[in-house]
Amino acid sequence: MVRLLVVLSVLIPGPQVLAYIVAWIVIPAEKLPALLQSIVQFLPSGALGQAMREAFLSGSVSPVPVLVLLLWTAIAGGAATRWFKWN
Image: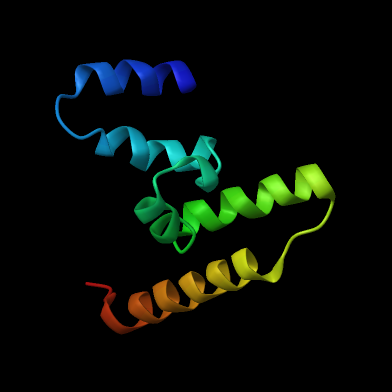
């Protein structure tokens, strides 16, 4: 996966936004630029990645990523209930 990110960063001219977007799943948020760190920790994939890393490395998970995932679940469930209609 890291090799894929390196290839993408070479192929995509300009800011390497795509590589950063894909990277937070593989690379800890602490390795990303400061602005992206604050964004990534509140995205479902960032919270899930953080929770999984904590679980594997320390055997426990802090409540923040769990709360982020629960919040996203509530938002997505509410949006689906509100806007999804069977035809």
